[in-house]
Image (cartoon, rainbow, N blue to C red; front, side):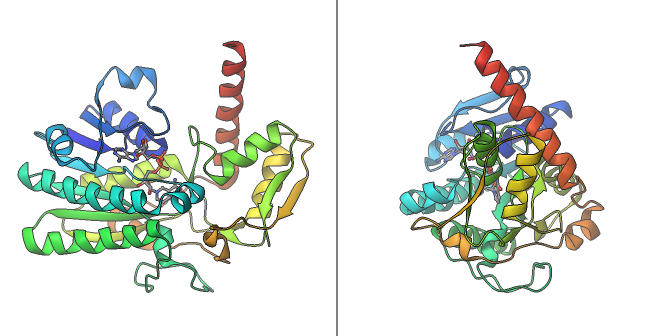
Length: 316
Ligand SMILES: NC(=O)c1ccc[n+]([C@@H]2O[C@H](COP(=O)([O-])OP(=O)(O)OC[C@H]3O[C@@H](n4cnc5c(N)ncnc54)[C@H](O)[C@@H]3O)[C@@H](O)[C@H]2O)c1
């Protein structure tokens, strides 16, 4: 099957593309390569990589010719990046989705699968795992755009019958992620025996979901579902950020100090005290819920990080 993956050269996209190629699909990636190309060399040989911008309608329509499924992942990411570039963040989301939907309709594609975020739940205080019908309350240009896209996909399904799914990822981590995100940032600090900076109070929790589980969820939705729906993709356990730093320090035998610091301006996200999700809906509809333990995911991520480090050192 011919499949377009926008943002396919990024962290999650590269894992998804690898899996799609393994399963024999013909994959086109459209990516602006903002943070380099994370697709492994062996996979790269078997895909059609187009360096282009999802905000550009012609580039998306050209890339999507003949596609049966579109995975739309291209986005601006990282708290600092978003705080610095709120307009570009919105543009990428809005025009990227609009162009992807147009491409899906023109090609009579079977479905579009969109990567949304747990950020759409906002900073609401929670006492239990977030479920999909918990009221959305997004509070950044990024999460507002993600919520807008979810609503747009629903209306497009109602108006045209294009099957559309929005998957709300909860803090994805794993090999190839870069240090815009907290886990690779802690690994870098631990490796260099530098202070591991945890934003106060450090007791804020997040639900860390391993990337292979996210890919499995996306594949199940592609293979099994039609209609429209929104689903969480969450490991369903919460860990404090301080605990995550301490675990990484311990597993990397680092001498770093875990240091609590004031969040910089623009880091509103850290005001969210607790966030963890329920994947029960995903499990009910696809028979799968994220299952990689945090311990196992962390070991695999550290192993990758250290191997990459050694390779880089060897090449210098
Ligand atoms: N990583 C997470 O924890 C997480 C959580 C929730 C949702 N998501 C969503 O999952 C998707 C993938 O995230 P990721 O972690 O792989 O991020 P990533 O930054 O590694 O990948 C995003 C990719 O999109 C590309 N891109 C950005 N702007 C583009 C443009 N204008 N045109 C074409 N390509 C463009 C980038 O070059 C990059 O390769 C994103 O939509 C993100 O919002 C990720």
